[in-house]
Image (tube, rainbow, N blue to C red):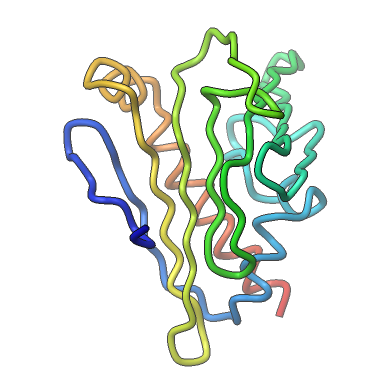
Length: 162
């Protein structure tokens, strides 16, 4: 399997950054709940109330978001692939242990890859969508913009860990 999937610009987007930190720190910030709480949600939009991740195929990824009015929005998905310090894949299309998901949100499959580049890390976040309608809805909802903000917060958090 290719490290990076072939992107269809009508269905998918990728955000790529160079992080001036080793892959072990990038992986730690990506996979430890205490770090997810620091960067996952754009700060102007809300905060992470709770985070949990079980790093095994079939494991849970759960990130509850507290929005401006204090309401908490659960985000639960299933981990599909784990290659430490290289690749993490999860989807909101499934609940933990591969149970079919029921949700109101637009489902995605998220692929995060990292590879050493000099003394830093090349990080790529990719979001795959079911169809063009989901892709358009996600872009219009602010998901892409929020993801860019979160990735920038992620980069700053990793650099701060050095």
